[in-house]
Length: 385
Image (tube, rainbow, N blue to C red; front, side, top):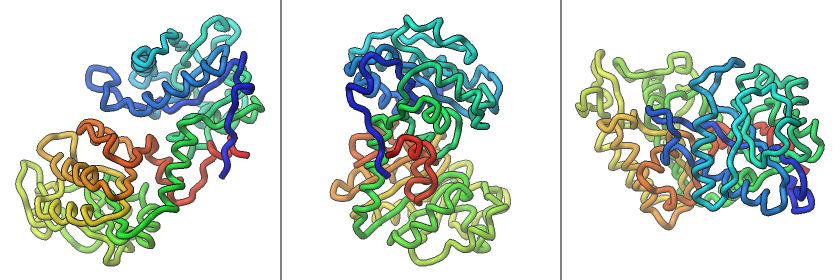
């Protein structure tokens, strides 16, 4: 897929609608901190580039969370706006960001502000419903549309599909183009041994990826609740562990020598148990030391590495060792090509200060998985040639 890129003559003197990746988490204090702002960091160069091309105004649009078409304060983009402004100032872009909390406001009343961010688009049901009326209202904010939100581009929502159509002049932003190029290059350049590390909670969201990996990877190292479900599908008692019961039949189809499952685990309370000896009241929350050793060995031998999803409940330090050791092992293998993605995976890598030690860290979670398996990417199609 060849994306449509903009040049200075497309931007000069124009009002630009910029669809950005704003779906970031806030910490317990309600602030977007340095462990959750990778997506925002990648917005800043795009803004700088647009203004250097002479944009008259840039209107940033995006969403956060799933408020289901209603205004919910906990999903407001206000803290996102504050953090983005801080990041912009740190890079010398001192334009104040005017935050507009009413999606129904008249665009012409804000023509004098150079940089604007609209409140969460998903506060209006028209966004997820791909409502043409809502899209028409959004399109009135500018003359040129730029999609830089790779992480949302697997969705067919109004701001991603209908707004570019309504505006006519629609382009791919640099962050989006970089994501697509990096992922395509990764797929084309896979060399063996190819090792994939796959974790997280739900197997249902990763079945297409696991099916692809079964055909291409030499080792698929599985952890998290994903591993629990596969083990349960093979008749292993997982006690009180999180298991996706509705997916047991599908999970049973994930077989073959490439799939490497935990042999031991850390249960609630910190006790290390053999995976075949999990009692009825125990919950598996991390991979165990012997499994870590095996996984690290396979990673050290790899020439290509893909990582998506933590291997345990890493939010609690008692169950973070597995994910942290895997992150360090991948970072240590400097001869391999590495790709990581997914919100929790990125957060972990950022906490460990290892972003620069990975070949590429994708800001997309579901979008990355969809792209890798060749699924539909409506947001990309809307800005392609």
